Image (spheres, rainbow over the protein chains, first blue to last red):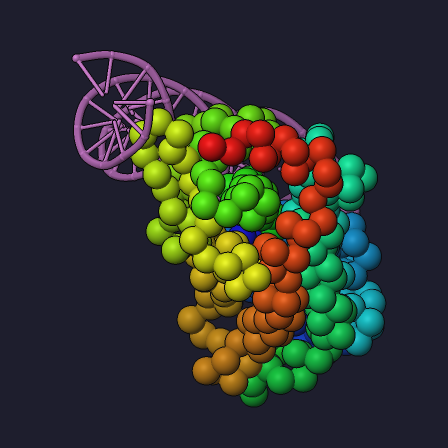
Length: 146
Length: 146
DNA sequence: CTAATTATAGACTTACAATATCTATAATAT
DNA sequence: ATATTATAGATATTGTAAGTCTATAATTAG
């Protein structure tokens, strides 16, 4: 079980966006460059973040992306679900349940485990990690911003 | 992010094995039948459980599989890791870390979340859910056992 | 107004791992 | 001796993630 690369790109991009001076944008090329991923692919990921309402895009010269939601209010889980969807990561699938016919106890345990994970991902925000970005990277991102 | 079907099969198979009378075996055909999966594929999954030391296989007529470890001592996490391996479900992957150069804070948060999940999967055992298998299924499994 | 820049959308391709099958072999019981 | 059962390895299939390509739309700078 692994998170997708897209989720990785999304989380990192959100942190970068949280670091640029407010009001400014940063283009997909710069974001892709730092993450060593192709701009065309990253743009698909970013479009999902736009659709989720975290980010706004600006076309044209000196366009790019910027946050439109307070990163203190954007949790890890928010970003992850914007990319991966909200389906639970385990489903029993058997039609004749081996336990009490309505609930699969195995699925219950797995769902509880997922909830524990999600609780932690809800306690951590993009702002929380953006605070810890190192100085060099901040300079770099500020330079790349428009 | 999803758990594999193989993990699903493994968990269910372990519960079935925990339910048959001790000392008896059950063949892969019966186990596959209940789970609506091909015996050949399930046998690969079961082989992993053998290698993990939870289960023993017996060849020949009336052979099959049986538990060789107390199901109270087998956690969900044990079974999952026997099938999916132990790699963590998120890796930063960037070589130039955006945070403190050694640690990716994003990865840290993700790893902590994974730990929360694993804690819960360690608190739940195969025996725990085997207790809750319904009467019909117990009868069915007992009948299928050798 | 024009040209350059930038994001978006959709079709398409590629790569890879999960899932599944098939066959041959080994072990065991009747 | 034969039927039964698991194992191992090779192979095939499938589905999804990952990535590319092209055309289009929006915006800004000159």
